[in-house]
Image (cartoon, rainbow, N blue to C red; front, side, top):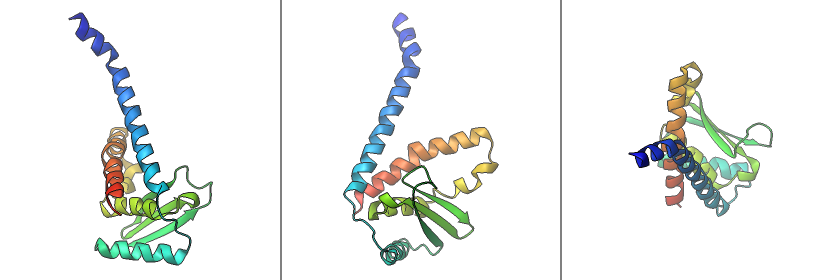
Length: 150
C-alpha cells in the first residue's frame, strides 16, 4: 500500500512532466515542418494559395490574411472567426510560408475557429475545456495534418 501512496503523491509531478514533454514535442514538430517550407514572398502568391486551398476544401467563406510585423501577436500565427462568413489569419512575417498557411487554413476548414468566436461569453470551466480541447486535440490534429500533406 505504501508504494501506491507514493505513486499517488508523485502523480501531479508525473502529469506535469508528461504535459511538458508533450508540448515540447509538438513545438519541435511544428518548427521542423515550417523550416522546410517554401516562403511566400508576394501577396499575389498568398492570395492564389488561399483560393486553391478553399477550392480543394469546397470552402466558400471569406478568409482575410494579415501579415504581422512584430508587435500585434505574440505567436507565429493564428486563425480566428471574424463574422458569420468571415475568418482572419494573422501570420508573423518571419513565418510566412506555405506550411504555416496550410496549418492555419486547416484550423478554419476543420471548424476549430467556431467555438473560439464565443469564447468571451463562456464561463471559466467552459473556457478551460475549450483551451484543453485546442491544445490537446485540435492543435496536434492540425500539426499531424500539416506534417502529412505536401
